Each structure stands twice: as C-alpha cells, then as structure tokens.
Image (cartoon, rainbow, N blue to C red):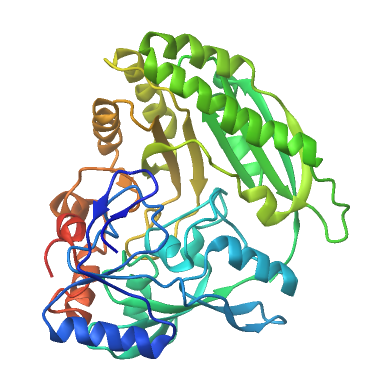
Length: 434
C-alpha cells in the first residue's frame, strides 16, 4: 500500500508495509516481527474514523482476511466474531442465527474492532454504546502474546480495552452479548425545533431510541423515534420504491446536490438550509432492528462530536444555535443529537454519567475549522468529551481532566505496550507518549 486515506479524506498515511494476517497466529507473528525491529504498527479498520487514529507512520495491519463468526451460543446469545468483520456482515450473520445486537449506530461500514475501539454508539437513554455489549475480548499484545479479558479475567485490561483506541494491542476476536432478533417500529417526521427541545427529556425517556437532526437556519427538526415491537409482530417495511426515493434520491442524491450548490455559491447555503428544513417528510414503518438502525450515507462530510452531561444539553444547544449565525462561513449539514446511559468503561465518552451527544458536520470541501473550534469551546465549558473517531484538537492534558480513569488507562497501556509499538502521532497527542 503506497497511500492510505480515510473515508472523509481528513487523514492520509503512507505505511512502509502492510500486514494481512489470516488468523491469530499470523497477527501475533506480524506484531512480534514489528516490535523486534523497533517499528510501530496500527490496525486500519475500514477508515470510517474522521481522525488520524489509524494512520500508520511505519507498519499497518488490515484484517480483511480475518472475518466472520467463530462460535455462537444461540441460547445464551453469546457470539464470538473475528475482529475484521464489518458491522454489516455481522448483522447479516446474526440475523441468520435469529440474533441481533441490542443497539447500533447508523453506519455499518466499520469493522467490529474499529467500532468498539473508538466508542461507536447509537441512541437510547437506557442503553450504552456498542462496547457495553462486549462479554470478552481476545487481544494480541506488543510482545506477541495472546490474552483474553472479561469482567472475570484481567478485569483492568477489559475496562481499558473495550474502548482502547487500538493503543493496547490488536483485537483478534470479540465476544458479544446478543439477544433474539426483534422488530423496531420507526417513526420519522419533522417537528418544530422549539417543541422538540421543550419535550426532549420526556421524548428520550418514553422511547427506546430517540434522536433528532436540526438543519441550521431552519425551524424544524427531523425527529426519529424507534421502539421495540412485541415478538410475533408483523413486518411493515418501507416499499422498495419508498425506500429508494426517501433514502437514496432525497437524502443522498438531492441533498448532495444542494450541498454542492451551497459549496459553489456560499450565499445560497442559508436559504437552502431553510428549504431543506421545510420539505422534510414523514414516514412510519417496522422492520428487523438492524435495517432500522442503519442508514446509507452517500454524501461525504467531516464531523466533530462531543458527549456532554445530559442535564447540560439544552443550555449547550442554545449556545450552539446562537453561535452558528455568527460564523463567517455557513453550515450546509444538519446537527445530530442523541443520548446514552452511563457506563463504567474507562475511556468511554459516557463513563460515569448519562450523556447527550451533539454531532456537528460540514459538507466535504467547505470551511469548517471556525465552526468546529467554536463548538469545542462551547462543550468544553461543561466537560465535553470528544468522540475518539471524530475531529477535535484536544490533547492528553485536557482529556485527563475529563476522564476520571485516564491515569488508570495510561498505567495499563504502559504495562502491555511499554515500548509504544501501537502508538502513532494521534495517540501521542490524545493519550501522551507511553
């Protein structure tokens, strides 16, 4: 590989060599050779992080040859999957077994290891991110040893590695606590933003999965409510034509066209934003859970997302709304708001507190630095924690003050990778040097 780039084009690298292992033994062998030669190694995942977390300045490892489910105890819902498996493939294989993930984000292109390592999450006030569904991990450490960790075995490593940023070792397999397949009822409709904000706590509490998108310069939000249906309920999916028109034509082709027009003529962005907010349509359907959770994203963008204390959401969002009209360059993409329950994972963005997530975006190729920096300043006032796979400028000194177990993570990292085999420039910034 002469050149690597992530999906958004915000990070590139030119690895000296790329390892393509096909089993755990080959993963261990490649790590051992790399460490013995004094080089560094980064697993690549599928490139859906917006940061340079996967950028390799020496060796890289792709796990595209190490995929699929290893074992499945359907009765207990315990499924062990190879780390290079994409969420899309995992969802399909779980579906064939009559199983499902409890919660998912809206993109399924990530590998299982990449998604958990960066803290990928969906939405749900009573639910955690994907990492909270892990029952055990198998990792290959810097010295080539293969270890297993869980709530009962190497518990500190487990607390650190569930959101480990790839800094502790290469994950070889992940054992997930799944559950029987279920249907979700999906309600998506435009609602006045003021009404959504006023009822936010109630809406988050009374729905299994609740989120909304606000189009800057518009008065409406697109609100999504997904709720479980009883076993045996009837599938009522969108027709193929409706799905194609709503998601592919409207949300990808047409919206992408509006963004390109706004990029070419910036003064049109605000009226186009108002237009997009006013033409949002409603839809209701029910389908297998992963088909409701996941949405195809064909329009490329850059993104920054922070987790904040749930109780701070309305104040923070008010400041963000006041800030956007002051920007020198307008914003072409919507703002997304989600929620998650507190967890005990050391570097999880929801560690120790119920959280709201605010994600801001800009169409690729349009100016975003003033917007992202101002947003970071606003959420920083309430101890905002950046999503590890999305853009931010914080360093280890600042992040240490926002994560109670940051030093514990650093200690475990030093124990399992004392020479910094798995670090890179991004990790040196956000975690410090080993």
